[in-house]
Image (cartoon, rainbow, N blue to C red; front, side, top):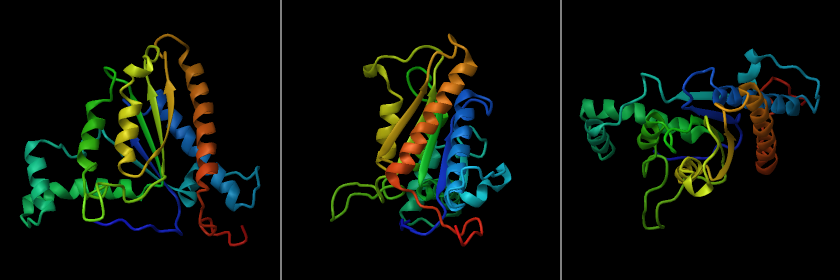
Length: 248
């Protein structure tokens, strides 16, 4: 699989969701961030009209919004047999079982490579991430699949660079010292290999100590500020015709 830049297209936000429930604080913050980004672009194509309203049903007209739920029963299980079959399929095997094992993993990899903006939501479990998120990473982060393998031109490297990553994490207690934080350094390093090398974090701490709604509101403010910064820094452009407004 090769990756090619497509300069004129709607921007794609991919939410890799490892939140425990869709009512969790991390998931709710991600939803608010996506809404904020969508309204930002809507105002842009409407010629800067800050009062322009956009219903949620129209969000898809502005940005491609995709979600990958790592807890879904449809997620591939990257066990020993699957790993062996995927390796065979990627090295020329036409066996139906090998190709069937590789197909969902290839689709996940292609989905990630389409993303211009990556949001990952996850609780902190035992100083790290839930196993379901780690399994997703093991499925898609593979040389030659989501980043270039080493070759005559040099060592392993991303297909592209400079794409933003926002990690929204939550914990019941206070955050550990920096030298004991294994979540953000791990996630940011892994996805930098795939070109998402502008990492940001919203750490929602003390959910078992402080008022959850207050934690949520503070996290939304922080997430939206980061989103604005990312848009400004990367100057992400939206196709001006995406809302059918050629005069925008």
